[in-house]
Length: 320
Image 1 (cartoon, one colour):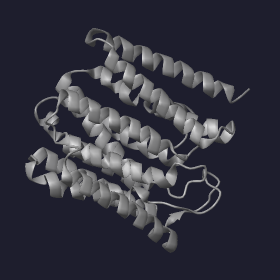
Image 2 (cartoon, one colour):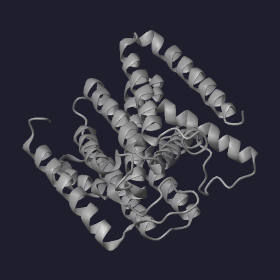
Image 3 (spheres, one colour):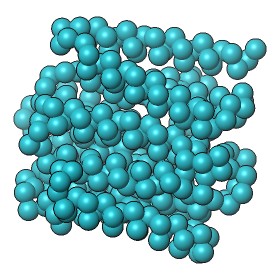
Image 4 (tube, helix red, strand yellow):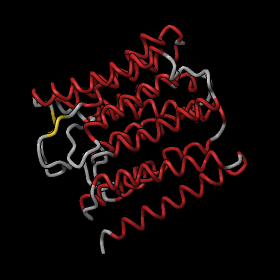
């Protein structure tokens, strides 16, 4: 793929579009206003993830002729999520409407499992897919989180699929999404971000991460690959549980994630927290590849146990 001219041309197009979008968004004031929940103190342009749409279009033009019906549905679903999410970036849509769309798109991609009698798998994938989509959406809350953590996860999936499914059509798609994220990082990986990804990028990337991870797990039977997103999955899962017990509306904005507690309550710089999340996830993923097949499930269980302990330990520090 690195020697593929369409890939490099598409990458250049994505980079140019990101630069152009930043200038247009800044000029037209397309951005996030400062609110009590904001991580920024001044107006910041948003919607930088719009290049994920460019990536999907480039992918379809260059590799679309090889697509099966299922893959075409996946692309349509991803594009639908991206377009609706950008509309949400411009004008807030109902949280319930967004959630229903996430469920519908994930269900549409994996509908075959339900009709083949694997309703239990279908329900688990539905919950997992919607969870990953929203977990990635949360990442855009602080500078560098989506850029760094997203790059770690996408790079891991590209390496994994290249190892176990080298002929998969997901490879160029994930690679172009990685390029889109790297282009976004130019403007976001800063002490004061110049651009936020917005739902259009975070949700779209989360969707394809969920699809790719699900497909590779079912193709290899390595359920332990769930550690590839363990750091943020633990944070998101237990934060939702805590909000439910507190009687809060889980679809409303909040500041209860561990990374939010660290940045807003304990005043740890955004980039330090983002780098820590990405570095820990990268270390977990690299170690997974060094462990023999027989020990990977036990490793995954240990990882989730340790991360859970760290989560609650750091959360308790907040009250001291």
